[in-house]
Length: 474
Ligand SMILES: Cc1cc2nc3c(=O)[nH]c(=O)nc-3n(C[C@H](O)[C@H](O)[C@H](O)COP(=O)(O)OP(=O)(O)OC[C@H]3O[C@@H](n4cnc5c(N)ncnc54)[C@H](O)[C@@H]3O)c2cc1C
Ligand SMILES: NC(=O)c1ccc[n+]([C@@H]2O[C@H](COP(=O)([O-])OP(=O)(O)OC[C@H]3O[C@@H](n4cnc5c(N)ncnc54)[C@H](O)[C@@H]3O)[C@@H](O)[C@H]2O)c1
Image (cartoon, rainbow, N blue to C red; front, side, top):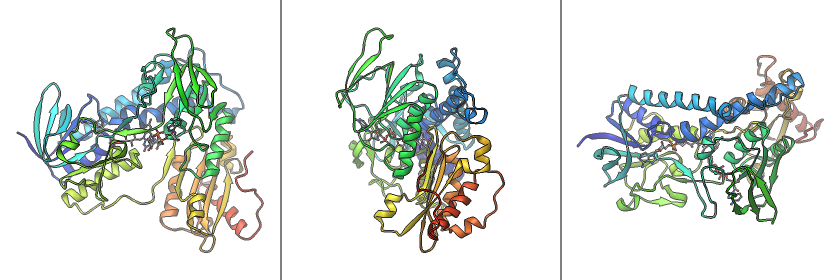
């Protein structure tokens, strides 16, 4: 039987980065992946496919060219599902090879098959070739899958989840998205940009519940402007699927309304991938929504078994999953480098328009009884925003401590928000002040001016010279 220092289960962002780090430090590593492809939800079904589809939708619809040239680009009649999925397939295939190359380059031994625990050191691999391998340490990085409530008749054709939406063979004229979390909002705005009549059904009165409420409301306004209809405090209670695919699905809502749409996308949560691992059999503690319970070192209740990524639940991001993988290796092998996950990290929502945030929201500042001020700046008021012809009512909002003027939170809605946020993250991490910000020179014209003018606005607020109304949007 082959013996390893470490066996990693899963080749998603968490498993790949952990395996590569352990191998880099000279340990003998095996990685087991149940699929023929590498990269998990990060590469195959989640992060990169959806981000590529967003870019494709922007390109095909010319959303951002409208603001510059003032013309609506009609999505060509001939634009079909093939064009829509083409670039996604190119990116996925390329990144699949990149992950495999990275694992092989580090000398990691790859096993194809389904892994399950025999005991705390032995993993059975089921597949074409059944075998058992032994590991001093085991890392569970099995990710998550779309949760399937019983009352939803998924058929992989028209009633879909975020995995099966990637294999559509026909473009819908209309779609209902259930859930206004990250997946729901991102896909709703992708389909909205493609000119698909889009409905979002959410069981709360707020989309993307963790966002600063003002920003969440600003995104709702933009979605409505892009003709996406959001049905709040509602849900889908029953489904009627006609035999003839040309006829619409009939969805009954909790409110009693009926939606007749071509397609339905479930985007209301995911569960951890622990089925078949035999966690109970070896006494591994698990939690809600099929997650594995870990301590702050990502160690389970069985000391040589660690778990990272989506399978441990929140925050369930590719960005944080990779770091968790690297940190788990630090603790297994005492590499003494990366000890813990940064407590300040950004959220990037790849909607149209993008939204990104770091640090605290107004609601959190109120809850913590912080005496805070706010400062706003709008894309359209910057030279770069004017050149771009901002069509998103994009803006940046700073939240700062009134006494010290230290920046506590940055919130951006608009073009490239997920890129622009990183400067804001540095400000929050390093506790920089508004004075520091206005003394900083940026390239001109760039969108970084947003930071400078939000600072001036904040300082104006402090001095009682407010000229803009808070949260003002066209
Ligand atoms: C639609 C969508 C969009 C997203 N967008 C973003 C984004 O923009 N930014 C971001 O940071 N995050 C995003 N995420 C989240 C991100 O994809 C996940 O957080 C990330 O992929 C988790 O990484 P992981 O390695 O834990 O798991 P996964 O990527 O799910 O990988 C787990 C791997 O383990 C394998 N596996 C499972 N069980 C076994 C077993 N028993 N034996 C062998 N192999 C097994 C699976 O086949 C899979 O390859 C998105 C997710 C979705 C669904
Ligand atoms: N850009 C990103 O970083 C990104 C993108 C996509 C996904 N992800 C990750 O994937 C995870 C899962 O995302 P998600 O959007 O599926 O889940 P989620 O839990 O974030 O959102 C689910 C939404 O659906 C609503 N909902 C739940 N049940 C409902 C029902 N029966 N009827 C109506 N509405 C209902 C919830 O109120 C919530 O708003 C996220 O936690 C996130 O970490 C990240």
